[in-house]
Length: 143
Image (tube, rainbow, N blue to C red; front, side):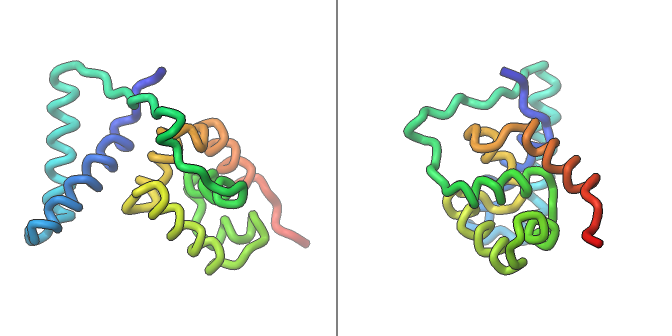
């Protein structure tokens, strides 16, 4: 198992901290969460610790439809809603609806966190996301 990239860990920490800080009505919660997440990553690195995902139990992995999994792959690849809509022959609103539902299902606060959680749960592999990103970049526009 490989270590999680620090940006992915920082996004997860930032999301969790933002939720807690908002619950306590802390002003500028997002900014403070970003600063605290960066500090946490620096501290983790200073101890030389590796950050590894805890393997998800099979019962903990959310069940999603094939179409939503396709959307997850494209989100993990970094595509915009419009690009994903073109790729899957859906409307932009349709993609946004799938993303809203996926955010709830996976308990994510942002598209970045959604991608991180999808990979952590094994719903999307990094190779799939990279392949999707490459395919959309090399795909020629319709004539």
